[in-house]
Image 1 (cartoon, helix red, strand yellow):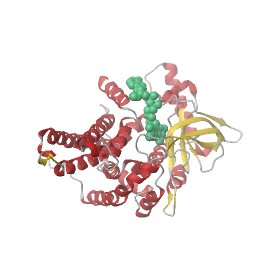
Image 2 (spheres, protein in one colour):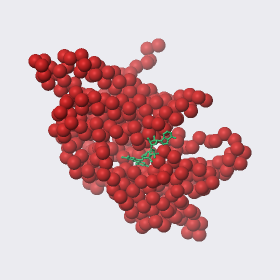
Image 3 (cartoon, protein in one colour):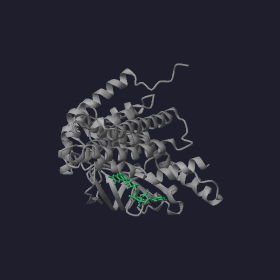
Image 4 (spheres, protein in one colour):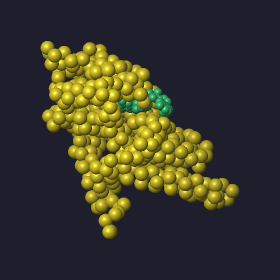
Amino acid sequence: MGEFTLELNEDQKQVRDWLHGFAADVMRPAAAEWDEREETPWPIIQEAAKLGIYSLDFYAQQFFDPTGLGIPMAMEELFWGDAGIALSIVGTGLAAVGVLANGTEEQIGTWVPQMYGDANDVKVAAFCSSEPDAGSDVASMRTRAVYDEAKDEWVLNGTKTWATNGGIANVHVVVAVVDPELGSKGHASFIVPPNTPGLSQGQKFQKHGIRASHTAEVVLEDVRVPGSCLLGGKDKLDERLARAREKAKAGGERVKNAAMATFEASRPAVGAMAVGTARAAYEVALDYAKTRVQFGRPIIENQGVAFQLADMATQIDAARLLVWRASWMATAGKPFTAAEGSMSKLYASEVAKKVTAQAVQILGGNGYTREYPVERMHRDAAIYTIFEGTSEIQRMVISRAIAK
Ligand SMILES: Cc1cc2nc3c(=O)[nH]c(=O)nc-3n(C[C@H](O)[C@H](O)[C@H](O)COP(=O)(O)OP(=O)(O)OC[C@H]3O[C@@H](n4cnc5c(N)ncnc54)[C@H](O)[C@@H]3O)c2cc1C
């Protein structure tokens, strides 16, 4: 008895306060400007790199925190600062995780440092999976990777879409079809090194929210990469494909797609981002409700406003607890038998959308203007129910898990 605790330890508190300082002093004051500019906030990424916040070391430290709370705590603070800028800072991490999860030690050592660059010359990376006809339905992916045995090269052709940092990245991680017969089991991930001919940026999207984060199409035309750029290596791929073919022939139970399993584990991190945005909007609304006077008293003295704030606070805490539980489970190696990773992402993202809308309402006309940050936070929050699997897809995953 006595071991259970939800209290952060001293090291975690120190990191949280340090990140909070950066979020409050550097990100918040810059948020409106970069939202309007709709550009990658390079100077802020550089500042984060100088402080050690934008670095592989920092993420590795949080990732290997034995309680599992390092990543959710970091995400919540950075996204509390500003969602668009924060995504520009952590977007590289999504690509890095793709390499850490599937790459060999040599691949990790070669490519991950090039994803970040250094404080004097920062770089970003992109993870390119989604395609115009393959969003939720990953199995419909068409981008092809064909092996040229004579040259030991892979040749990639196709169009990726919605890629965070797509086209501006130093290193792109591209998921492509190597065996079309096997659906999503026939996919593999490739590194496309800096300045590889044939890779270009297509349309850059103008977005509703998280506008400081660059989102674009990535076009691949006869992109040749060395055999060593296949993540995990050719032997491992051949073994995996042979197993999948046997299963398909036997008509046996479908092996769980590795990419899907990775998503399930990374979803709590997106849940934590949503908690950060929700908390930010709630705090603005709470302060406003205490100071805005109508009918001779602060509006918080009306039950109609106070109860909304009570619900917002409760839902944010509930969302955080689901995120922390899933993150702890992932770190402790507990299987997500009820899709607890998806549960945390589903609930936190829906809470963020609802809470930010309520914050706009509590600020009245001011909430609807760009003079106050809740307008931006409300736009930003809409992404959480869409990327890394929509809310409908999370419900599909959860319902399948509990129906088993
Ligand atoms: C800003 C932004 C950044 C992104 N960053 C990346 C990135 O870095 N890398 C990357 O690879 N991708 C990225 N994405 C893509 C993102 O993951 C997809 O947009 C998402 O998976 C949904 O795919 P879709 O847009 O094609 O929607 P669709 O799959 O077409 O879905 C449309 C609607 O139909 C619903 N729907 C679909 N199928 C079902 C079903 N079976 N049952 C019920 N409802 C269903 C969905 O829930 C949704 O409401 C990003 C997207 C955005 C907007």
